[in-house]
Image (cartoon, rainbow, N blue to C red; front, top):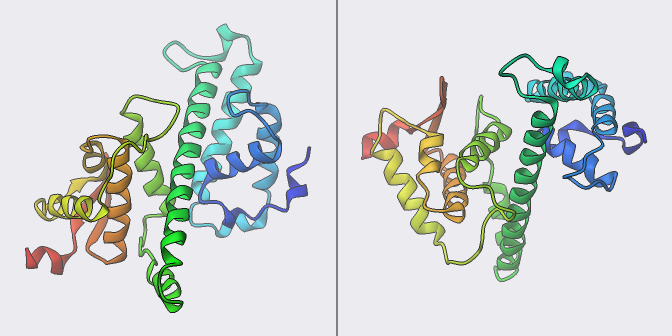
Length: 245
């Protein structure tokens, strides 16, 4: 099957994991039983698009292409020749990729559920309100892409026990309360706090999701600034917000 038949536009995908999930879905594959040869071929065909050179997160797509080729080559070689001592085997790398795909897919399902709930609430507002809300939800990330944030969220999530479902909706979480908690933690650390530290302090997965949503809202309101540094992303209160505290 040829990926070009789908007329893929790379800008429609938040990152390489999103693109891989699309290819898995259109090929009706089981995520835990990947045809890596077919998926790799289709993924590489999708990257032949001239659009790739203009994407801000093109590096992530190319890095995934390199990873897929490495996994594929290791799986084709005899096991004793596929990896150096201490390096992951092809099967281990494939298993890690499957785990990342499953985690991202579960996260998307949660986001879609939250979006559906938002749409239901918007129907209760007067007609002009949804458009005004949508117009206000523009995140100014500057040199940090949404895929960067999603990757950092995934890494924090991986530190917790892997389960089939991303989060059990077994408690009521107040976004307002979580927002206040996140805001207080960031404002109390004017020198900065790592994004991974902020997220990993959540008491459960549902609370972590709420904290991530609250953080996006703070970005929208320009209350938080990001800095790239070794170890991840450093969060700091915006200058005016820091002075006010």
